[in-house]
Length: 242
Image 1: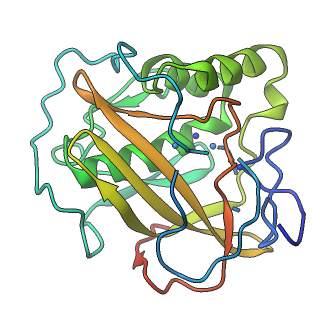
Image 2 (image 1 turned 135 degrees about the horizontal axis):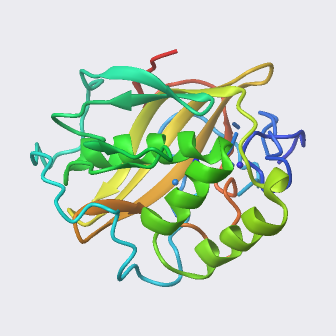
């Protein structure tokens, strides 16, 4: 699964420049649009998750038989009860009998998330976790990323210059807030703790297609363009497995 103070962010496309919060995929794939949803933040252009210009139509998540139970359709206002496990360099949530992922392939592809806000949240964090490895990121782009120029651009870079787009780690999820949820489109904001720099927010937009959530990428394929420095977790639901 990328400003006033420019530094490298684990998310920015070229090496995931962690623009500091100082973050410029903060604080992949640092490695998935609205304004930061809660908390004080100053814009720091870096580049995941604005709406894709092309709608998803196929990229069905290698699932065909996903049947995660559908939960509450209201965005959670408290931290979900779940286990955590390392996905790449990111500690990601897991609830195989609930929010998901219901399936994990040999390549590390994590699919089958519940058709509800919590499922979208789990899908987003797991997507970013998959961006630190070529095999799992390739699978994520092919199977659980919305079709469009952003996906094509990122896939091309992954093939020709993987070190420029693979997440370098150095960040963990610290909280979340939902910007909107319609049932088929979820826009949320993740609060991130970035090693050595502080906190940042990352906007991710997902759409329901077939029987799973697909992450939308901006047309230029930049994974961290929506990252903003964050001064506090005010307005976020604290949530972390690290």
